Picture 1 (cartoon, rainbow, N blue to C red):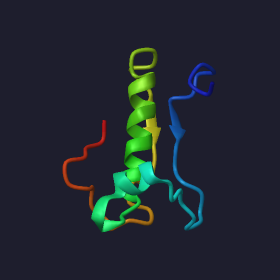
Picture 2 (cartoon, rainbow, N blue to C red):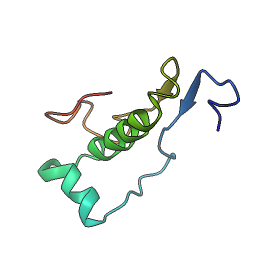
Picture 3 (cartoon, helix red, strand yellow):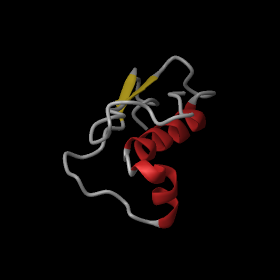
Amino acid sequence: AQFANGARSVSLSANDAQEYCECETCAEERGASGDFTANLLEMANRVARALKDEYPDRFLCFYATYHGSGALPEGMKVE
């Protein structure tokens, strides 16, 4: 909705808390490291893929390593 109203970027950052989903799917995404960066990055990438064709010149902003290790999980990239 914000892109449709002319916004050039939208924040997808997590709330300022340390409570995250503990479901089986999210735990599997985190892997053995338990790093929540994988969950945040996967969510941002899903949103980016869903919007890229309609809004190719817009940006999604997020803190991928907000409560994580400070590095992207192995094999993951920002889309």
